[in-house]
Image 1 (cartoon, rainbow over the protein chains, first blue to last red):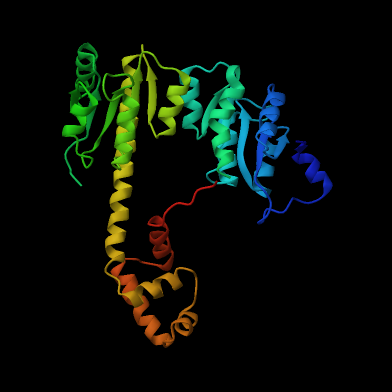
Image 2: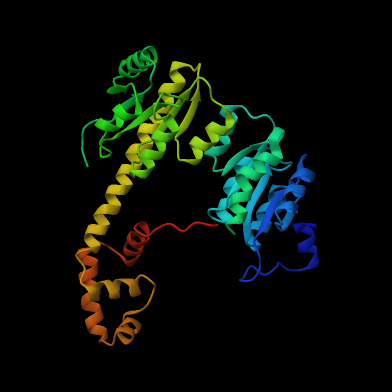
Length: 140
Length: 208
């Protein structure tokens, strides 16, 4: 399944319709493990939009219906905790999954407290996506 | 709602841990109540009692996570601080997903625990105050007549008295009288305050 960048959408002129009939997409902020994430999401037949950074992700959340978001702990322009707040302001209740490399318990708790739906350990990324993201996509 | 001071409940199957936590909590002047099992805690717990819960994750019988689920099922809003010596990330994530207030891994500094307890008690006080305020508003809503309720729903959507009268098939003067009764019964000083009350008692919407 092709992954499109939201900035490309902006360049194309105008947001996609956020009305009925448009399937919600999975927002994925570009990260080290993007290839594996996209592979799993393709296997789950989930439409994906890949964003370059946090600001790009927030812009997309404001104009497109989203199934969920998969973001790294740190992005070039903001931390996951800040992005979660911004995404929730744009799309209240949106499930945001944060991919963390070998997280400590305290780190995972901090991320959860900032409003994440779940923390996914990048060392077991595919399994984590299947456990946390797949059930949510099945309920679309 | 009961007015006695908040209690810090401790549920841990290890007697030494229970004793040391109870001592620590009481050392800062807070009432503490320790239980050796989830079942023992549930047998004596009244969800109207203010406080917070320090909960061991792994216990024989009902685990800490199972106790948290049971409390959720019963509609208890008590903040839960998990304490564990064997914490792993999936366990912490599950606890937080179920609404845990915090998840603390042993060993920890006494002050870290006390800080979390104070924050949990503050959260409990806030949520109880909010629930009490909502209950008060619901009680006022229950005093409205069916017609007053209709008028209230329309005026809080921003409709003018004249429009409300046309929609309900009554005169503008009648709407004004109902409106005055609504404002009085709801103890609302302004339309904005009335709208806020209605919103406060509305169910939150979730996405997705």
